[in-house]
Image 1 (cartoon, rainbow, N blue to C red):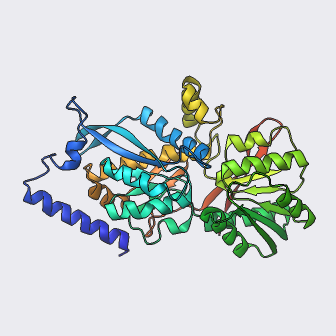
Image 2 (image 1 turned 45 degrees about the vertical axis):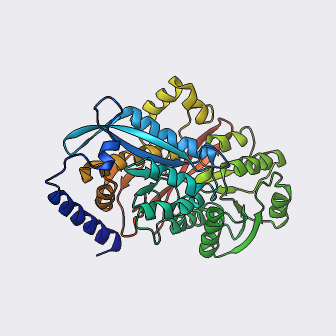
Length: 400
């Protein structure tokens, strides 16, 4: 029996004994009391949202939250143990930094949430993870792809593919599309997401790899792109944050760079897309969802974005659907499934139920393996249609 399911069984047994000793579920635990809606008598359950609203990953975090917010608007209640609960999203901004992430995680713990969603950005997920672990609070990563997030943490799960898979997908694509034999990899110095992906890319690439790392707060990437040109590489791989990606893509456009740019899931943003608009930049990104995959979801969220000016602003000013938004949407419904399976708002019960939760969402089927990672075997590769300022599906890529 794997460790996550072992501890889930132990938690379930402990709860059963506790309830028997108290004469059944009276609904009077501290968690349930805190979940009563103030002054109304209605039941409420809180889901924590551990996301960056500020910092380099702020644009991506906001788009990920949009999916949760739309899902909450669409389904604002959940049936738990025969009682209808109002679902409240409780936010904590992790600021895109590892020094702020533990404080944001602790804030959610103090607000008596039943489980947590997030974060966009692997580094902050790893920084906040020990806080959730120590508090016995389950977290569901939405698009944080670094393998170390769930490793050694029985309380972190995730619904996205991992970086080792994503890197292999991009290597295969570089070989299949461009017959690439020489690659230039560029990432932020000390960023575990960037550097982890570059390491996996290098491990899987059987040609020559040239690597560079830029310091935090770099604003001029001319030297790096000029080096890629001078080295006569076949592809450039830059798994960086949206803030840096917009600068790199914009510079590539102004330079007239003709080397294909490969990006990870973080580059799947309409903000990055706009940086390439009207240029000849060849931009390809791996991602979790392609617009058109679920017409009902696409139509519904586009209508909401066009009705809500704040949501539209948080989406970058247009109604292009980012894959992280679709993932945030699915994560919300996975959280509801966990609450229903637990039959309680108690965080221990929710944690005990999570390993066996399955859900079919707009991004595909979701289930967890022994580590708490999602069982995924497919990624989408999108390319930037720079003339029409739109993402188009290039291919669906798998790893054998």
